[in-house]
Length: 253
Image (cartoon, rainbow, N blue to C red; front, top):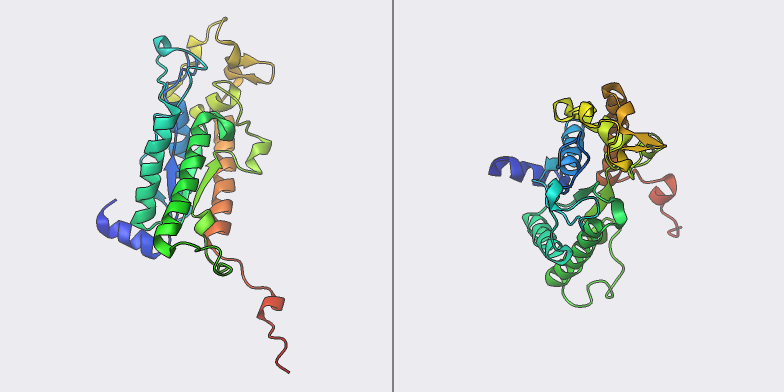
């Protein structure tokens, strides 16, 4: 994105989408960067249907070596230092002028260390910038304007929003759902033949067998996820029309 394009996006109020991810073992059949690939692909698909800016990803999130150690390619970073880095990034994006900053979360869902670090960083940025821009007592002086989005300006959303969560399980790790999603967007990165008969347990659970995934199933999941995100962003960025009651002037006669 060139500076002139950035200025236009800011003037038009386009939301900024910030993908996140990690470098983590996802079985022998998927690449280490699955989480980042999926959030970036979701952003790409959303931006084809709604005006939005896609930021470079926060790709090195904390993993806690929960799935594997470094011997399988997993990278772990300090949650505290990751949070500080995320805060610096979010602060800069705020200062650039984006009205809506939507962080896309897939890795370890919304309660994992990565998501919690981002949520803390976002909260700190919101309060620090509000104090800097509006002064002490900025909230207590008077009710905020209904159009003031100070508390909502930075948000963390899961990759799978309702109603897409009816067909896509966010809790899946390298099983049916993530494998199907990868087959639906980057089949050249998937090697199902490497699973063998004794693949990791999380690739062959009762409800999530990676071996059963197909590209058409992944395509259907992507359609549902993208539609859910587009709908949510449209509701967020376009204020609702006033109701008749809100347009009626009372108490003058």
